[in-house]
Length: 306
Image (cartoon, rainbow, N blue to C red; front, side, top):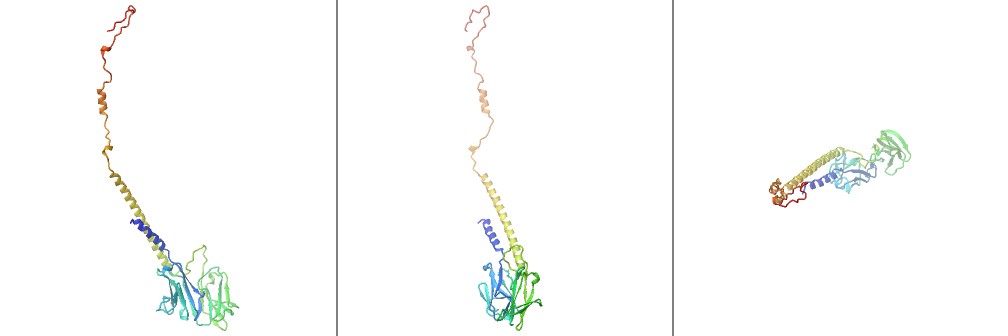
């Protein structure tokens, strides 16, 4: 098989394989805080199921623990989801999805409290310019008057426990908590605000913990493609030179018929024949008749024939 036919499929495979897989981790219900005993589902929204995504976490009692691992004893995997049927304060920590190839998804920070008040806030970073609603609730009610704080500073009091921040900006980033009189105070949760993109872009993980790995992977892919292109060009040039050389050898080895060869010689024979052939016919003097111009005196005399 020609080398070119082997290089082309390899080149196409490398082009398809160099695109890094992506995933996005979300939480249902959408909140960063939960009561002890709540049912929580972690969802890995992946663009390539063959990449082998795995849900992991870091907590105070385990590190890089995998969902469904019997040795770690947390979570029950169901397809691309991980269900926690009974979440407790020891489950507080950082969660993410990780593929076999190295890239990881965004990270989410979950807080589980044994208290009576939580603050429902966005679990994922919010886009600059969007509206954000915070909800302060107890285990049995979500419409009680509540006071809201940012970085320990009082913001406002909401009669129904809802506070909306309109058109958030980077200055709205911070640590938020709430307090319901007679019930207690919620844990604090960090709200992240990301800059709004100026041009449309495909969805991508908002957190970039795996950016160095992605850049290194992309560099290796580019280098690999350059090597393949050089080999492909070299193969094409070699094949062209071989074809030209074979064409030249074929032209030299063609059969030659000596009957087709004509040797040009000086036209000597025609000259000799011309010399042997008399240029003028022989003169026979017996055929010559002599005439004498008559004079005036003997004009009447006719000449005699000899």
